[in-house]
Image 1: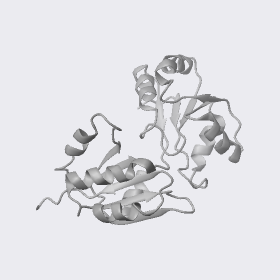
Image 2: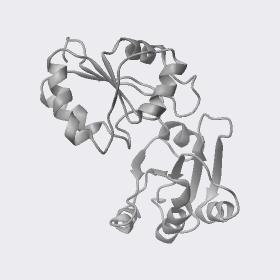
Image 3: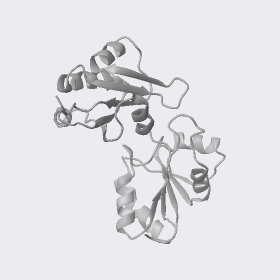
Length: 230
Protein backbone atom coordinates (compact mmCIF):
# COMPACT_ATOMS: atom_id res chain seq x y z
CA UNK A 1 0.00 0.00 0.00
CA UNK A 2 1.49 3.31 -1.07
CA UNK A 3 1.87 5.99 1.60
CA UNK A 4 1.98 8.77 -0.99
CA UNK A 5 -1.01 10.94 -1.83
CA UNK A 6 -3.16 9.53 -4.66
CA UNK A 7 -2.55 10.87 -8.14
CA UNK A 8 -6.04 9.86 -9.23
CA UNK A 9 -9.25 9.92 -7.22
CA UNK A 10 -12.40 8.19 -8.49
CA UNK A 11 -15.27 10.22 -7.09
CA UNK A 12 -18.88 8.94 -7.12
CA UNK A 13 -21.50 11.56 -7.91
CA UNK A 14 -25.27 11.48 -7.24
CA UNK A 15 -27.39 9.25 -9.47
CA UNK A 16 -30.38 11.53 -8.99
CA UNK A 17 -30.79 13.24 -5.65
CA UNK A 18 -28.07 15.89 -5.39
CA UNK A 19 -27.90 15.39 -1.63
CA UNK A 20 -26.29 11.99 -2.22
CA UNK A 21 -22.76 13.40 -2.32
CA UNK A 22 -20.34 12.73 0.51
CA UNK A 23 -18.42 15.39 2.42
CA UNK A 24 -15.20 13.68 1.39
CA UNK A 25 -16.19 13.74 -2.28
CA UNK A 26 -16.78 17.49 -2.06
CA UNK A 27 -13.40 17.96 -0.37
CA UNK A 28 -11.58 16.01 -3.08
CA UNK A 29 -13.35 17.86 -5.89
CA UNK A 30 -12.48 21.20 -4.29
CA UNK A 31 -8.78 20.38 -4.00
CA UNK A 32 -8.04 18.37 -7.17
CA UNK A 33 -5.90 20.14 -9.77
CA UNK A 34 -8.18 18.93 -12.55
CA UNK A 35 -11.59 17.24 -12.64
CA UNK A 36 -12.06 14.74 -15.47
CA UNK A 37 -15.71 14.56 -16.51
CA UNK A 38 -17.63 12.29 -18.86
CA UNK A 39 -19.78 15.24 -19.97
CA UNK A 40 -18.49 18.64 -18.91
CA UNK A 41 -21.92 20.22 -19.34
CA UNK A 42 -23.64 17.74 -17.01
CA UNK A 43 -20.82 17.82 -14.47
CA UNK A 44 -20.57 21.59 -14.73
CA UNK A 45 -24.13 21.88 -13.42
CA UNK A 46 -23.31 19.64 -10.43
CA UNK A 47 -20.13 21.56 -9.63
CA UNK A 48 -22.03 24.85 -9.86
CA UNK A 49 -24.61 23.45 -7.42
CA UNK A 50 -21.81 22.45 -5.04
CA UNK A 51 -20.09 25.84 -5.53
CA UNK A 52 -16.92 24.16 -6.76
CA UNK A 53 -14.74 25.94 -9.29
CA UNK A 54 -11.90 23.77 -10.60
CA UNK A 55 -10.49 23.15 -14.09
CA UNK A 56 -12.76 20.72 -15.91
CA UNK A 57 -11.54 18.41 -18.69
CA UNK A 58 -13.49 16.02 -20.91
CA UNK A 59 -12.80 12.30 -20.45
CA UNK A 60 -15.20 9.87 -22.11
CA UNK A 61 -15.34 6.60 -24.02
CA UNK A 62 -14.58 8.30 -27.35
CA UNK A 63 -11.36 10.03 -26.28
CA UNK A 64 -9.96 7.93 -23.42
CA UNK A 65 -7.49 5.96 -25.57
CA UNK A 66 -6.10 9.21 -27.00
CA UNK A 67 -5.79 11.08 -23.71
CA UNK A 68 -4.75 8.47 -21.14
CA UNK A 69 -1.00 8.63 -21.91
CA UNK A 70 -0.88 12.42 -21.55
CA UNK A 71 -2.88 12.26 -18.32
CA UNK A 72 -0.44 9.77 -16.81
CA UNK A 73 2.45 12.03 -17.83
CA UNK A 74 0.82 14.95 -16.03
CA UNK A 75 0.26 12.83 -12.92
CA UNK A 76 3.95 11.90 -13.02
CA UNK A 77 4.68 15.62 -12.86
CA UNK A 78 2.61 15.89 -9.69
CA UNK A 79 -0.86 16.92 -10.85
CA UNK A 80 -3.78 15.37 -8.97
CA UNK A 81 -6.90 14.40 -10.91
CA UNK A 82 -10.44 13.56 -9.83
CA UNK A 83 -12.46 11.41 -12.23
CA UNK A 84 -16.25 11.65 -12.22
CA UNK A 85 -18.94 10.22 -14.49
CA UNK A 86 -22.32 11.72 -15.33
CA UNK A 87 -23.79 9.81 -12.36
CA UNK A 88 -22.64 7.14 -9.94
CA UNK A 89 -19.23 5.56 -9.52
CA UNK A 90 -16.72 5.98 -12.36
CA UNK A 91 -15.71 2.83 -14.28
CA UNK A 92 -18.97 0.99 -13.45
CA UNK A 93 -20.42 0.77 -16.99
CA UNK A 94 -18.68 4.11 -17.56
CA UNK A 95 -15.19 5.18 -18.68
CA UNK A 96 -12.45 4.78 -16.09
CA UNK A 97 -11.00 1.27 -16.19
CA UNK A 98 -8.37 2.08 -18.81
CA UNK A 99 -7.16 5.14 -16.91
CA UNK A 100 -7.00 3.27 -13.59
CA UNK A 101 -5.03 0.43 -15.20
CA UNK A 102 -2.48 2.74 -16.81
CA UNK A 103 -2.04 4.91 -13.72
CA UNK A 104 -1.35 1.81 -11.61
CA UNK A 105 1.00 0.41 -14.28
CA UNK A 106 2.99 3.65 -14.06
CA UNK A 107 3.50 3.05 -10.34
CA UNK A 108 1.19 5.86 -9.32
CA UNK A 109 -1.54 5.73 -6.69
CA UNK A 110 -5.30 5.49 -7.25
CA UNK A 111 -8.02 5.86 -4.67
CA UNK A 112 -11.74 5.23 -5.19
CA UNK A 113 -14.13 6.95 -2.79
CA UNK A 114 -17.24 5.08 -1.65
CA UNK A 115 -20.53 6.53 -2.74
CA UNK A 116 -23.51 6.39 -5.05
CA UNK A 117 -23.93 3.59 -7.57
CA UNK A 118 -27.27 2.56 -9.07
CA UNK A 119 -27.15 -1.23 -8.84
CA UNK A 120 -26.79 -1.45 -5.04
CA UNK A 121 -30.11 0.23 -4.06
CA UNK A 122 -31.83 -1.54 -6.97
CA UNK A 123 -30.62 -4.92 -5.73
CA UNK A 124 -31.64 -4.25 -2.14
CA UNK A 125 -35.02 -2.80 -3.20
CA UNK A 126 -35.80 -5.76 -5.44
CA UNK A 127 -36.53 -8.18 -2.61
CA UNK A 128 -34.48 -10.81 -4.45
CA UNK A 129 -31.60 -12.65 -2.74
CA UNK A 130 -28.64 -10.28 -2.38
CA UNK A 131 -26.11 -12.42 -0.52
CA UNK A 132 -24.70 -13.53 -3.88
CA UNK A 133 -25.17 -11.69 -7.17
CA UNK A 134 -23.56 -11.09 -10.56
CA UNK A 135 -23.40 -7.69 -12.26
CA UNK A 136 -23.76 -7.88 -16.05
CA UNK A 137 -24.09 -4.18 -16.84
CA UNK A 138 -25.39 -3.41 -20.34
CA UNK A 139 -26.02 -6.30 -22.71
CA UNK A 140 -24.57 -5.95 -26.22
CA UNK A 141 -27.00 -4.15 -28.50
CA UNK A 142 -26.72 -6.67 -31.32
CA UNK A 143 -23.77 -9.02 -31.82
CA UNK A 144 -23.21 -11.33 -28.87
CA UNK A 145 -26.45 -10.39 -27.10
CA UNK A 146 -28.11 -13.82 -27.31
CA UNK A 147 -24.83 -15.54 -26.42
CA UNK A 148 -24.53 -13.45 -23.25
CA UNK A 149 -28.10 -14.23 -22.22
CA UNK A 150 -27.78 -17.95 -22.98
CA UNK A 151 -24.62 -18.03 -20.89
CA UNK A 152 -26.70 -16.97 -17.87
CA UNK A 153 -29.39 -19.66 -18.13
CA UNK A 154 -27.76 -21.80 -15.42
CA UNK A 155 -26.75 -18.85 -13.22
CA UNK A 156 -28.12 -19.34 -9.69
CA UNK A 157 -27.08 -15.95 -8.35
CA UNK A 158 -29.25 -12.85 -8.69
CA UNK A 159 -28.40 -11.09 -11.98
CA UNK A 160 -28.22 -7.32 -12.41
CA UNK A 161 -28.45 -5.52 -15.75
CA UNK A 162 -28.40 -1.88 -16.80
CA UNK A 163 -30.85 -1.11 -19.59
CA UNK A 164 -32.25 1.82 -21.57
CA UNK A 165 -36.00 2.55 -21.75
CA UNK A 166 -36.33 1.80 -25.47
CA UNK A 167 -34.68 -1.63 -25.13
CA UNK A 168 -36.28 -2.81 -21.88
CA UNK A 169 -39.23 -4.67 -23.44
CA UNK A 170 -36.93 -6.43 -25.89
CA UNK A 171 -34.66 -7.49 -23.04
CA UNK A 172 -37.53 -8.69 -20.86
CA UNK A 173 -38.84 -10.76 -23.77
CA UNK A 174 -35.45 -12.33 -24.48
CA UNK A 175 -34.90 -13.12 -20.80
CA UNK A 176 -38.38 -14.66 -20.53
CA UNK A 177 -37.62 -16.85 -23.53
CA UNK A 178 -34.27 -17.96 -22.08
CA UNK A 179 -35.10 -18.18 -18.36
CA UNK A 180 -38.83 -18.84 -18.43
CA UNK A 181 -41.63 -16.28 -18.18
CA UNK A 182 -42.24 -17.06 -14.49
CA UNK A 183 -38.76 -15.97 -13.36
CA UNK A 184 -39.01 -13.22 -10.73
CA UNK A 185 -37.52 -9.82 -11.51
CA UNK A 186 -37.62 -6.14 -10.60
CA UNK A 187 -37.36 -3.04 -12.78
CA UNK A 188 -35.98 -0.02 -10.90
CA UNK A 189 -35.94 3.39 -12.53
CA UNK A 190 -35.33 7.00 -11.54
CA UNK A 191 -33.60 5.80 -8.36
CA UNK A 192 -33.29 8.48 -5.62
CA UNK A 193 -35.42 10.88 -7.70
CA UNK A 194 -38.93 12.20 -7.04
CA UNK A 195 -40.59 9.62 -9.29
CA UNK A 196 -38.54 6.57 -8.25
CA UNK A 197 -40.29 3.34 -9.21
CA UNK A 198 -39.57 -0.29 -8.39
CA UNK A 199 -41.87 -2.72 -10.23
CA UNK A 200 -41.61 -6.34 -9.06
CA UNK A 201 -43.12 -9.49 -10.54
CA UNK A 202 -42.48 -12.27 -13.01
CA UNK A 203 -40.88 -11.46 -16.34
CA UNK A 204 -44.29 -12.04 -17.95
CA UNK A 205 -45.96 -9.59 -15.55
CA UNK A 206 -43.28 -6.97 -16.16
CA UNK A 207 -43.71 -7.31 -19.92
CA UNK A 208 -47.46 -6.81 -19.56
CA UNK A 209 -46.96 -3.80 -17.29
CA UNK A 210 -44.48 -2.00 -19.54
CA UNK A 211 -46.49 -2.64 -22.68
CA UNK A 212 -48.98 -0.09 -21.34
CA UNK A 213 -46.87 2.13 -19.06
CA UNK A 214 -44.48 4.82 -20.28
CA UNK A 215 -40.81 4.28 -19.60
CA UNK A 216 -38.43 7.12 -18.80
CA UNK A 217 -35.14 7.43 -17.00
CA UNK A 218 -32.20 5.18 -16.22
CA UNK A 219 -33.11 1.55 -15.53
CA UNK A 220 -31.66 -1.23 -13.41
CA UNK A 221 -33.13 -4.67 -14.08
CA UNK A 222 -32.65 -7.25 -11.33
CA UNK A 223 -33.49 -10.88 -12.15
CA UNK A 224 -33.64 -13.89 -9.85
CA UNK A 225 -31.13 -16.65 -10.52
CA UNK A 226 -32.14 -20.16 -11.46
CA UNK A 227 -33.58 -22.21 -8.62
CA UNK A 228 -30.85 -24.79 -7.87
CA UNK A 229 -33.57 -27.38 -7.21
CA UNK A 230 -35.18 -26.98 -10.62
